[in-house]
Length: 214
Image 1 (tube, rainbow, N blue to C red):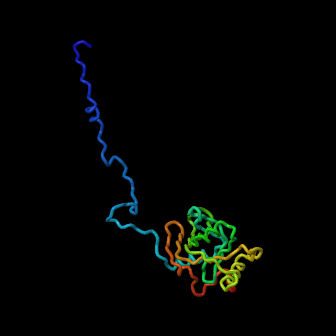
Image 2: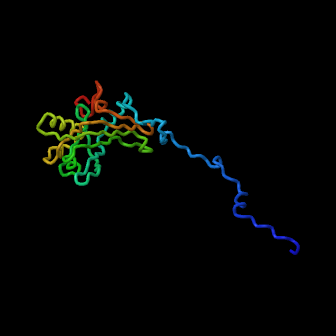
């Protein structure tokens, strides 16, 4: 309109200055768990507890109740982990026993490298990760049939798996005994223990499945 001067246009800088400046308090802070802190002054908390009587009893119960498990070996040609489902029994000192055919992949893997892990513990109703499970680490030693160890393994195996009588004496089958070097027990969410071989041995007075008095 005549006689009116146009208003000066705001610069981009002045226009931005009219907007409220965000402050750190305007953003929700992220919650960082203490265990995730990289501060050298904050000691890391180990969530795995040393073995106690509760852990020992739970681990022995899982082993004694196991009839099957997941066996992890090392594939000879690639070195990749190889997991297989296997039947399980216990020797008289609580050591896991396996019976496997020489034709199986895990048998060949153990011939090349006897190191292995055995996972036992069956999930129940609900979340399977809420149920206890035990991983036994060790070395699987082949047993010679015509020895005291071999004959005892056969007797204990048939006491646990009577239907195995159909094939237990086949020439291509052999027993292996896992010599435990340590174990990891997960009792459910927030309950983890580190165990030694001695923690898995039966307590005085325990009668294992497959024992004559069981």
